[in-house]
Amino acid sequence: MRCPCTYPAKGKGTKGKRARRIPIIEELRPLVLERIAAANDRPDARLFVGPRGGRIATGVLRRATHWDDVVAKLGYEHLRRHDLRHTGLTWFADAGVPLHRLQKIAGHTDPRITQRYLHPDMQGLTDDGNLLSQHLRSPRGPQLRVVGE
Image (cartoon, rainbow, N blue to C red; front, side):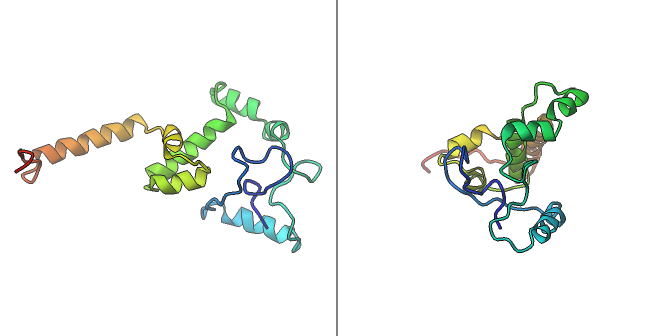
C-alpha cells in the first residue's frame, strides 16, 4: 500500500513526476494503521481517497477540509496549503534533520530549493545569538588566530 503523496497516479502527480518516500511519525502511526487495516489487503488501495473513492484532487481537498473557513477563523486568511509544506520542512530542520535528508523528503533535486523552504523563527534566531554570546564569554571561547600560522 502506498501513501497518497508517493502514489504515481494519473493526472498531475508530483511536480517532479517522481514518487518519493516520506517518514510517518509516531503521532500519525495509529491513523495510518487504521487506514491500512480498512483497505482489506487490496495492494492498490490508497490510504486516503476522495469522496468518490478516487484520487484526492486539490479542489476536493480544499472543500473537504473547509480550508477557507478554518484559516479565516484562525485569522490566517493569507495562509495557503502549500505553506504547510514550508512549515513541515522547517519543523524537520528545527528537529535536527540534515539538509540532504530534507531534500529527499521534499523531492527536490537541488538543496538550494529545499533551503528556500526553511524559515527559522525569531526565538530560534535569538537563542542562536545567545549561544554565540555564551561562547564568546567562555574561557574556552574563540581565540584570536593568525591565518597561515
